[in-house]
Length: 362
Image (cartoon, rainbow, N blue to C red):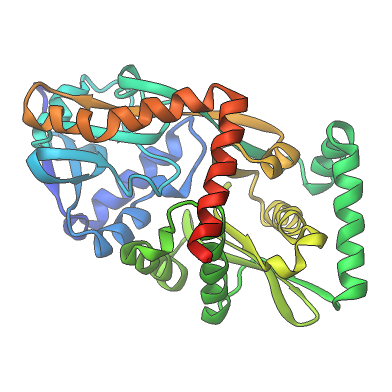
């Protein structure tokens, strides 16, 4: 950019004026106000991931763009909280004469990987290797309207789930739903359920990674901005928690992140009941969209009203860092994409993962 310059800062070095500008640019964007894209999320990640940086683009003294990212060895870079965050990319003012090469060279990066890039990210979409669906629930017109949509598109699902909810209340105890639970013990319970679920299904346990546990703790206890607030929702039956979810919310979007339930009550489908109550509470709070995230799942197919595209890929420039990126990421990504495009093979892979999970527990 001939009219501006780019500085790379640690999140804590951003001034309040720069943060307000970031929020204003995000508010003016046509993209949904996903809380993963707010400065508060970057601040939290920066406290648990020391390599977190923010590239700030200036025109004169005015900040006009931001790219939160992490920088690894040989300049390998990736989107903020890569592999965990559900919305990624830059926050840029309109009409900037900026390209990805210029921005990322200023960050001293040899590659920049992303796996949940927003569709509106024109700077990086040309470097996409695969596109995925992020499933969403639209409650903009209220929860009753959402229920009517479910009644039309999935009548058996809705009838069955509501019947299970009533049976749960009769057989286990009075139901109570808390949209924004502040009890740390409930969060610990959710993490334990989720870790067990990861192991049971043969998947990598995210909460076995210390930085993810610390990040969720931090977001739950300290992140309370109007457009990025850690939100723990809990469904109780007979006074005990049986399903819970931790995610982030803005004024218009609830980003669904870590849902889990007590498998002892699986016959009541408490996770589905939980999501219906989350949708109801979100609509009452004026939130219009629940983003269930990328990745196919039967419960998402039942609950969704639509889909948003997200992208996976990487910008690279010639050199050792780019070669290292390709060797470390690309073969596994291509294998995953190959399996995902073949339903019978995907089902076989899922059964194999569950078998691995059983072996781990034995």
